[in-house]
Length: 585
Image 1 (cartoon, rainbow, N blue to C red):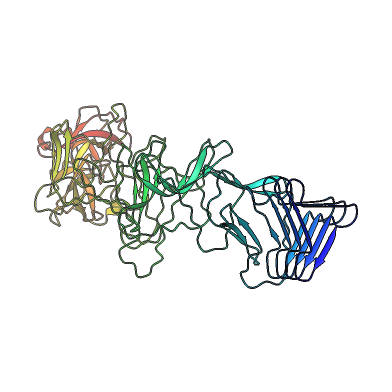
Image 2 (cartoon, one colour; image 1 turned 180 degrees about the horizontal axis):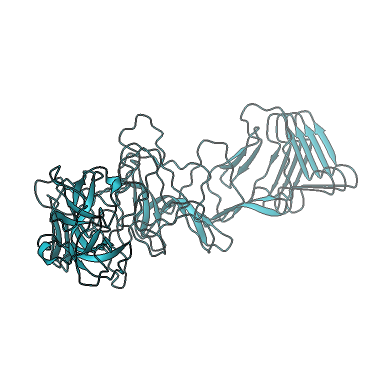
């Protein structure tokens, strides 16, 4: 069916009970109307479809108008326009200045498969496709730019967008929505919720797994970003890049909480942080000072509260230390306790051959100690304790591998003792500031005699242990080897290993120009057979052989000439060396 008009209606049909216009074709158009001023196709029916067009290969209904409506169908009970085509276009409407297709009814229009809007010259922002409601209020506008806007409310029906047969976007009548993803080219994307719920992310089972702009209805607490891990191994949140927490408030701005809602770590807006003290495992901490003008340091300990072990670090296997802070000027660490009766630094270990506290200095020119304890109060500088009652190790162990002293005690005060030794809190040993020693239980040495350092006539290299010594008649406080029998100048023997060595000199003065002369005790002594063999208990006197003693047999000459008593026998042949209890008289 075809109609054409320059000013009126190309095809017009009116029916009270049937179809207004009906056309059918196997290879052409079903209904075709064209008008330059009026309606291209106009069909009116009160009970049936206003316009019906059916074609096997062409357009079902085609209306063209230069200044009016291309196709206009009206029906009181059924469709205004019905166009059907097996391979062409079901309804085709063209209008240069008016509307190509108008549909009115309960739904306004229904399209199966696709709606195509031809690209024709249009004024800027002129609508290409409009949808009205029953009150002629526009609900959707399709613009020449390809975008579109929804106005008003979609009632009782969901808004669904599909890609092929796959649903990619849905807005339900209850306000819920589903989408495969949202991409926007605008500066801001705003999600607005009610009752403080904000926006949330839900998995396929309807379980909330995250959200943003969220408010907890139970506590009233608001969250800028909210994430929830449902299963073991899931992440509540993942950040690939920097996290910028801005704000002018001084309260905590970023929190890490445990499963009970307790805050583990807080990062504040002013750059400080807070940690509860629960056990934490860290792969490494890098706190660099990148500000060359920073004179106050870049690390602040803050507070470590709650729990016995308030701060814990586990050493990584490939690195020798749990904490290493290199290249810092001044003190590396500074701790200041706020409670009484607690240590400032507590080193604790349960491992074998590991020191609880270890200090090391590797600079060979450094003269300061690796560990130094200073007390400006009333207590001790350093205390060493061994509380294991079965241990046989000392409380303080000093090792020296150089040429210095293993232990140096320097008393700088005006009075007191250099050393005090106690047993069960009672003083037993004391060395005062003058170097005098006091011993409650006496003393025991490895030597067998008491000796005193004396200068000698000649060179000390000419003397040896066991030489019998007499007072020199040439110089004061000097001795020499004996050289005549029964000398009353005899005073002692060159001691081999004196237990006590007396001297008038200072303890740091050298004694290289003296010999240790034993005056009392058991001393190995040189003897000879000048007056026969010697038996144990015989009195010994000087002989004519320099430095040797012999048995004294002349009772008239013994007074003042006795060196001591023999403790071993001597067969009298030549010379020898025996132990003698030296005690001159």
